[in-house]
Image 1: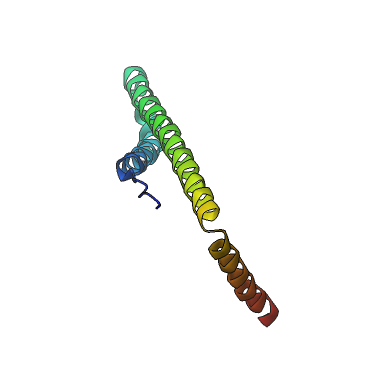
Image 2 (image 1 turned 90 degrees about the horizontal axis):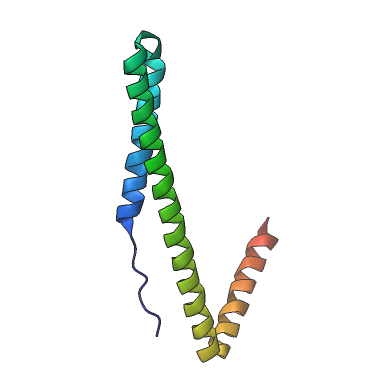
Amino acid sequence: MMERIPTQTGARDQLLSDLKTVIADAEAWLRHGSQLSGEELKAAKAKFEKTLINAKDDLVRLEQVAVEKAKVAAKATDDYVKENPWKAVGLGAALGVVVGMLIARK
């Protein structure tokens, strides 16, 4: 039987949080960039770069998780089709009929 694929919403939530922070920092930098002095500008730039690096790292991690989930799903699908070939053929035929009817309607 197929096993449940664990989801890692924490990685997705962290990525969204980092991206929101990057956007907020960029907006603040654009709004107040002309008013910042040399040290303030360096500090703002360093903060922005750090947040951007964190967002990139989270994106890479999320991509790795998605690839692993896709591999697990493909393996589960392959196993199911090998264990139940006629069900898979029937399901494919039924899906083909439905798609064909939808295409013919237009």
